Length: 442
Ligand SMILES: C[S@@+](CC[C@H](N)C(=O)[O-])C[C@H]1O[C@@H](n2cnc3c(N)ncnc32)[C@H](O)[C@@H]1O
Image (tube, rainbow, N blue to C red; front, side, top):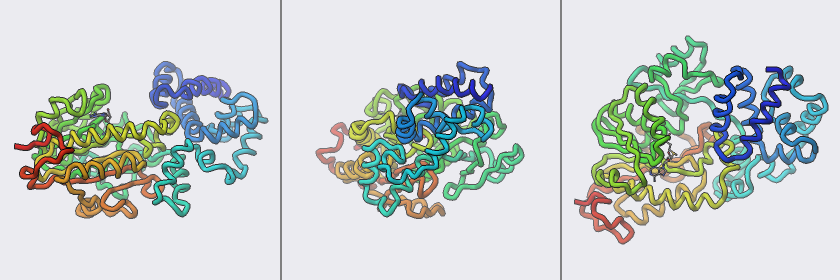
């Protein structure tokens, strides 16, 4: 498509994305499906440019509004992701002069929320954490404006990391072993992998390195009874099933049928037959309660603000409001309480989110531990160290915290808790679930 025509297409797509009625990736992929004539290169320029505008939206709006004229055209001129020649052909010369001037201007005097395109409430919530001082908040805010790397998990049931790496290299795709995850490969650039044999055969799956580490924290063993309580499309379920060497039973619960249905083709590719996807109506569903006290390990990858994934989903920051945080925290507490009821005495519970807000993380865990004295916090750092994984600046006490600017992973939080082996004898406290079956008491 001619560069000017591509800009016209981009304006139409940007208008749809900026309504923020649906996630940006959903809007973009629907648009591409509805416009099959768009070539691979045009799709790439469109998607990258739209995402760049969404990432920097607050700053770009501020700059564009001071320029006057068509706002969307100015936003796109600022965010356009193409080579110099394409850029020259795409926009009028005076717009490009303006672009060059404002992008080179000194923005350091602008308030941080504006400079790093964060809503003020979000910037304040991160700044008020207290452990991101000494310029670290700005390093984090800047890292959230980058695009995330393409991370893969190698399915050790099908191949080895070295063999998968060599296979990718044969396709001209460079991938490096990850710093932390023993199964991880980080790919150079963003090649389309879903038509590669390695992907079709289930030898590789796309999964952020931080997400892989959460499976390692649960450490499920062969033959165990395990649940991935909020399995979604099953990124972590697949890693857990492979750790169990396709033995035992792994329940994949979720309330969203459409998410769980995305797990099925991934399961078919992975070769796993130990996974049982179960759609539940809510966390206290009978299908959950039937398993009370029977499981060895439970992962709760709770629904959250997703602020740790802003590099991948920059539209989230414009779709979330401050009031979402306490609402999610209440939901997280309820899910954690119900999921804990599944564990046998001595069983392991991992509570995780991809949020960077303590209200969804540490505070949920601390409240839970106050209500359930039969659970004790374990050191996430030690559990990983036993698996030869050391993460500098990765812990908040016993809890794990990963940040894009420190670890080049998505932002993740995880707490590992163990139910006391003597839990059967423990008297339920007033805050514990009242039904015996909820806590697996005999
Ligand atoms: C952070 S996502 C999970 C991502 C997934 N574990 C992965 O690795 O791809 C949280 C999930 O929790 C699910 N969820 C929300 N409320 C729930 C509930 N009450 N019980 C179980 N799952 C729930 C959502 O549908 C969503 O799929």
